Structure formats: C-alpha cells, structure tokens
Amino acid sequence: MELKAKEPKVRFGEFTGDWEECKLEDILDEFSSKSRIENEHVVLSSTNSGMEIRGGRVSGNSNLGYKIIEDGDLVLSPQNLWLGNININNIGVGLVSPSYKTFKIKNINSGFLGSQLRMPRMLEAYKNSSTQGASVVRRNLELDSFYQITINTPSKNEQDRINTLFKNINKTIEFKENQLEQLKESKKTLLSKMFPKEGADRPEIRFAGFTDPWEQRKLGDISDKVKEKNKTGEFTETLTNSAEHGIINQRDFFDKDISNAKNLDGYYVVKNDDFVYNPRISNFAPVGPIKRNKLGRTGVMSPLYYVFRTHDIDKEYFEKYFDTVYWHRFMELNGDSGARADRFAIKDSVFVDMPIPYPNMDEQQKIGTFFKQLDDTIDLHQQELENLKALKKTLLNLMFV
Image 1 (cartoon, rainbow, N blue to C red):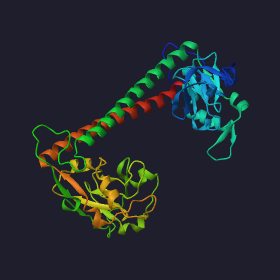
Image 2: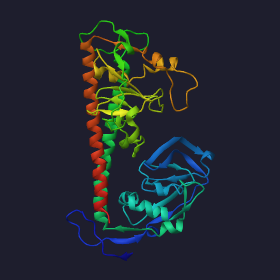
Image 3: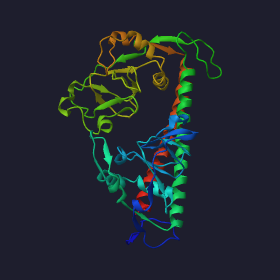
Image 4: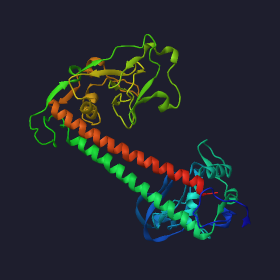
C-alpha cells in the first residue's frame, strides 16, 4: 500500500494519523459461477438502492450458471455500476445471476468498504472505468480499470467504529422507512373503511355517536367551476397538480418553467383551498388526480385543468374522499372514448354529476380532522426520515477521505 497524507474532516477522538491509499485490486478477489448447486437458495438481485430478494428458492440443475454469494461479498452490475449498482450482500447466502460481477473482500471491513464504494465521487470513477455500451444509459465495466480505482483506509479499529456508526444509522433509517410504510398502509385501509363502498349508505367504521345513513350529493351541488382567468396578469406563479405531491409550484415539480410568463392571461386563477382535477393519468392516478390547493396563496393553472370551489361541505373531509378509489368507478363509466393515451377525457357537464357521499357536517368534520392528524403524523415521519438520510450523506462526506 502506498502511503499518502490524508485525514477525514471528522473522526472519532481516539484516532489520529493519515489514512492509507490502496487500489481495489489489493482488497478484492473475483469469483466465478458454479456449474451445479445442490442445496436450495433464494435468488438475490443487486439494484441501485441495495440488495433485494428477487425470487423463490431454487436448487439443482435450475441453478446452472448462478453464483452463490454470502454475507460480506461484493456484488455489482457491469452495465449499471456507474449508476450506483454496487452492494455488499447483507441478506445472507443466496444466488445471483451470472451477469453480475462478484468478489470476496480481504484486508478491510466489508461494511466500511460498502459505505465508501457508494459515495458520489466513486460513481465518477466507475464511469471512467467503463466503456459506452449500446445505449447511453448502459456502460460496460472494464475490470482492469476498475481494479485501479483507489480508496483510502484507516486502521482496522477505526474502520470497525465507522462501520458500526453507519450500520446503526442504516438500521434507524430502515426502521423509520418501515414505520412510514405502515402508517401509509393504515391510512389506505382506513380510507377504504371510513367511506361507504359503492351501493352502501354507511361506512364500515364510524366514530361513536353517528348512526344515520349518509346522503349523496352531486359534485355540482357542493361546488362551482372556477371560470376566473388571469386577464390582468395579477398572478404570476404557475401551479401544477401532481398525483404524488399535490398542488405545487410548477418549477418545483419540473425543475423549469413550462408555461410562458407572457401568456398567463388565459390561465385560471386558483385560490387557496380551491380543488383541481388534472386529467393526466399515471400509475398514481389512473383516472387523474383531484387535489386541493393548500399552499396558502393564489396561483394560476392551465385551462387544461378543471378548477372548482366548494361550499356546504367540510374541505378536509372532501379532500380525503379523493384519496379513496371509490370515485374512480364513476369516472371509468362516464369517461369519453378516444382520449389521448396519457389523458382521461370526461365532459364538464358529466363530471359535475359525480356522486359525493355526504354525512352530516359534524361527522364530516370528525373524519376530516382525523385524517388531517394522520397526514400530519405521516409528514412528520417523512421529514424525520429525510433528516436522517441528509445526516448520513453529510457524515459520509466528512468521515471518509
């Protein structure tokens, strides 16, 4: 190993001195595929976000060409390495496709190495060790060049301390991710049970004290289409309706302005608490999303959107109804044929006939408040998760050379 004077900006107090520079060829041994595997093993996959279980357990002749990997082995995709598809296996013994490169790790803590190999500066090094493939998003690893990539390493004790720190951070992140997923699943379940199913006049779950059947109103009974346009040019912020993120600034969503600031006079004025239907369909919104402007300010939206303002209904309750899938049936039955592949077509005169379940105002407010508090809890957990990931990113930059 060649000595080079280097120290991280942040390190544990008991450690001093320079880190050593070494090449990947000094710490990696590639191993090849097996011709036959006698015991059953689960099939694993290496992805840009980590190792994953890809399929069920297989054995015998069906394993021809597969490689057995163990905890601590390095797995990478030769075509997608420069995108970050490089992982230390932490799932246990399993099989991976022969298309992956697999390595045994020597003379270094595998977890420490794994954290370093996924740092942003390493991605550029992988790109430089690859040649352009048939597609601009695929490159082919040149193993000789890959082996010449250098990393910096401290003593074994310092490696172990750093690995333990990031292992604990990763466990906390995983715990928070599971918590967040459980909360989202709970919300999804409660939405399906706290609004009546098609043909029913009562939900499965209700707050105590409410027993009356729910009424039904049409969308046009409790809302008015917004026809006001930005003729004077008073409002300059263009908004968009995202199925995943709700109503947000267009630039925040697209990272650029799609609309022309000089031609906003034909755009609809969208005030705070206005609702917007976006006919663009996606995996998140198979009939297009309906979202509420909760930005606390007025903006403008393309006339491709249907903007409407409610009355005589609790806005929190009304918003949560459109988080359910119950209104999709009406859209599917009443949408126009021959629509563009990426847009759902429905006439305004038909859209306003959409049936809306309508309990009394007290029950509406109870439901709306309950789901708002649940959304606030989800947002809090999401923010905590993002903070943890930001902390990890910062520490990776400061604790490695």
